[in-house]
Image (tube, rainbow, N blue to C red; front, side, top):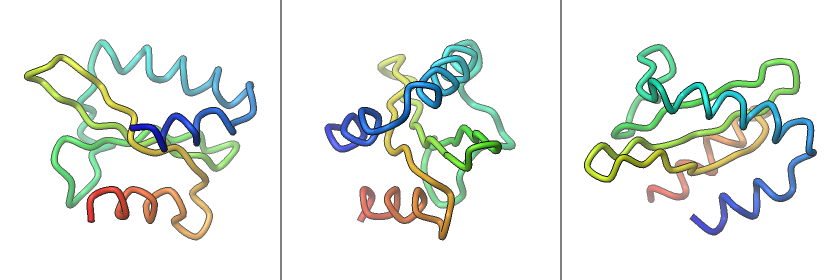
Length: 88
């Protein structure tokens, strides 16, 4: 998703480092039930509570892929609105 890459590139390096660490942990077990987003097929979130950022990713079992869909602030549900736009 090209727009997810653009969102990623805008992030501060310290936030990228935190997300990379969490993503590498998720590669072992990407389907964390408590982080599944309702209304989306195989879409999960990673939260960085301290800085208010969220990352949504989709697990594609048939391709063995974890696809980052959106990265953004939780404020005003910004990241979830961006995700909704991608699926509509």
